[in-house]
Amino acid sequence: MVEQWGELFASRKNYGWPLVKFEDLADLSRQFGQLGVVGYRIMGSFGLDGFVLASTVEHRRRELPAEFAS
Image 1 (tube, rainbow, N blue to C red):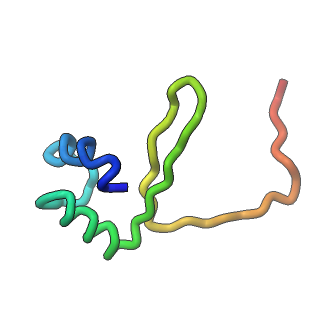
Image 2: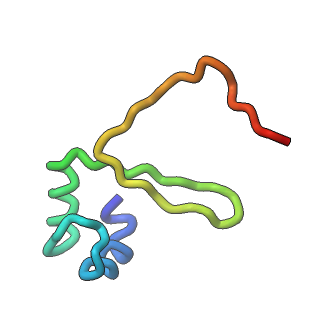
């Protein structure tokens, strides 16, 4: 994830994102590994895409299918 989005991480480095302080992209990747951070790519419609960084994940099975109001 760090390598693929390296330019974004580098450009935000001194502006409070990500919250981890890092020297370079190799350092950021190492710290993410130590913290157990995993990246998930989000791809949606209408240009809503990006990624989520998470240190924990919980998968839950739904008892019933999702319902949407019409």
